[in-house]
Length: 305
Image 1 (tube, rainbow, N blue to C red):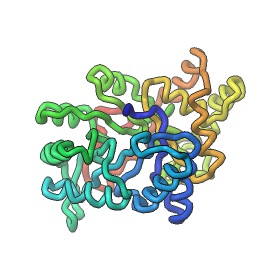
Image 2: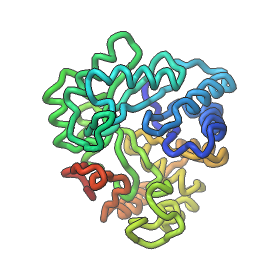
Image 3: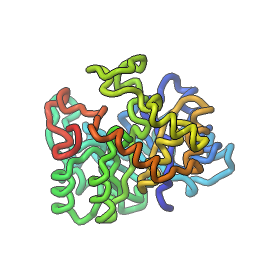
């Protein structure tokens, strides 16, 4: 199946096991057909239970949904890649993944605190997973242009998907077009900008070291467009993302927002709306950059690296 243009994200969806399972099930019951997860999120067992519950309640088959997971940095050693997949499939209680991503272009040993650039040999090990059908597609996440170019030059398999941070504060349109020109699909994580508490104090409304920009869904531009188009601010932002040919994976633990976000597919924006939203990214802001903490330089050559 093709990757749906809207999916349900599960990062930071771990307030309680019951809430995680319930949120994933509600997403599938509401009509989502893509679930995005990762070993590093620490909740794949609960997500798996939610998938099983959602499939049953929605009366749909496993083949009708797209499930993505990700290889974490501590399993980049080629001999450990398959073990990581095995654990993810066991935790999710699934026979296969539609997409398996390399979460970051850096690795470290299981007991090593030092990160290092380590992705080509890991990638070679990942495309061996395609044999046998337990992984249908493989891709990457958080790569720079130089890293992606190096990966492609040194391998026989081009990534099917590249997942990266994308939202009106970080539009990266040229980077998206570069992927589209080479047949690589793009998925946007954090498509609602800085709504995730991981990115800082959500009570702040001005630019600070904790929160680099005002909350995106409280932007006067976004709110005004939402009122004009009879959409919610979240639907406006997600519709903007989808219209660029990008798959978006918003996350929420609240049923009302889970259902609301799915309505983005029916939120129609006009040309002048796109022009106004575009201005929000004139001074790009990236919220997720662990370069300093990991001691590596990520996103080289990209906006707000």
